[in-house]
Image (cartoon, rainbow, N blue to C red; front, side, top):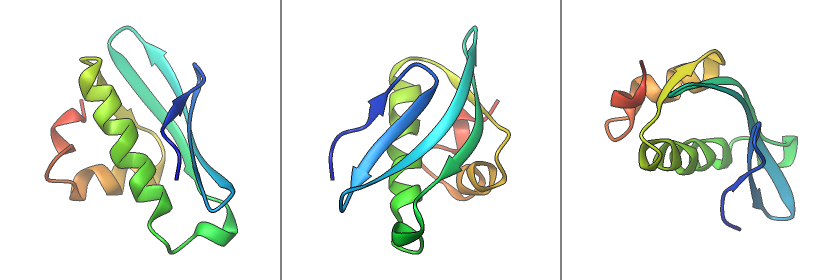
Length: 88
């Protein structure tokens, strides 16, 4: 696994030679998380959850809030004891 990358409109993280990603839009101090996806080979391995944890930690460090548009991101954040407070 490599470190989280932020391209300016997408977070990316590699595992097993594959890249999971999360597309987003930034508006002021709010990050709108539009879509989170992992390649088929990584589905069911927790890769998307690890991506969400890493990007959530980055969002917190930047002092931002998350508005999840993606259903997966919304469900993950609802279940997260550590990062659920970032939803705003």
